[in-house]
Image (tube, rainbow, N blue to C red; front, side):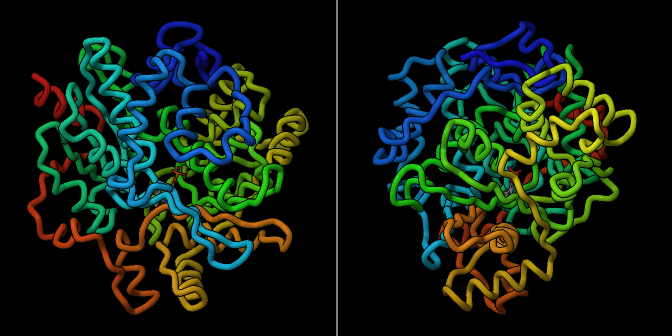
Length: 473
Ligand SMILES: *Cc1c(COP(=O)(O)O)cnc(C)c1O
């Protein structure tokens, strides 16, 4: 399997690259994102009864052909264990009532779905770096959950240092403590005076400085890393098998979305042949993607217009993985993607309902995506309603997905809502909704009281470079 850039240019300095290159490089050389040259087709009958690690091996080995299968198997087997993810199912499905279930993907070390991909990435990185005798300095941006997931996955790993940018004072106390209380010497937390989008821009700017990137061995684990999307494909298959009786039955999924990485994995699973019918995309008050799927207009907003909400991991107004989805919808034509992104820069947006884009808009409408938005009031209401009816506590992000999913629910098609975090991570909102504090795993009992280690920096790429230079002498 070779990987191409969504902008049709070079990737890792070549026209196509192998998996190991896209694993370590993040952005393609032309500023685009890496995509597999094709989607391998699923073998639903053979896969239905597999365990999580076995299913993962089948899927991942189709996207990774430059790591021997035996080595991949060993990596996957040590990643997806009941000790790390709480059960042998890894991503269990919890039925609320017939036809309505939660796909529980947040039982990893940091209590959010991002652990599923990042725990695997930690081991993949270590393997590839050791094989090639290299080191890597991971520069990432987080709105809360990616950062802690990445840090817990990379802490103590050989050859890896992590520099994680997070928006200063915009995360929950628990999220902040989870990251800033880590004292591993290979982990650096940088609190940026700005929003998540500012952090993401800085990562792009620093990564775009080719000389700096080479000199300091920069790599990425944020949601533009293809390997993360790949790892997330697995739980859509697992969830489908658990929520349906037999292959071929339709299933709708509802996904609370921010950077578009989670729902992109559902899109890829569908393209591989998984019978997902609707992909219900839920946004919070930052509703750029909802606007796009309803109107055809894509208008990312500037950082000043990004609202700080009670589902903070979705406070994103420029979803980086959206480019990958569009690449598929314009017939995988990198030149078209490049032109659309030029328009984004020059005019702040594009409108796919314009006649010249008709074919693309039709493909988008046929792709199964529908969307909706959820507000703070909706979130509270949904958390209450799910608790009252089923005695189940859901986190605010999951609530956004459930709210919008239910709006599209139809009686004859089961709906699977992705639970993207545990309520313990967002206690303040749960308390506001239910008047009670969610319980948390014992390892996190006193996390907010532990000493924190982080540096506050202005929203400026040069300041981040200077900090990194100092640490990497
Ligand atoms: C990251 C995150 C999301 C958004 O997922 P994307 O892949 O960025 O769309 C939703 N909920 C939670 C809890 C998250 O951590």
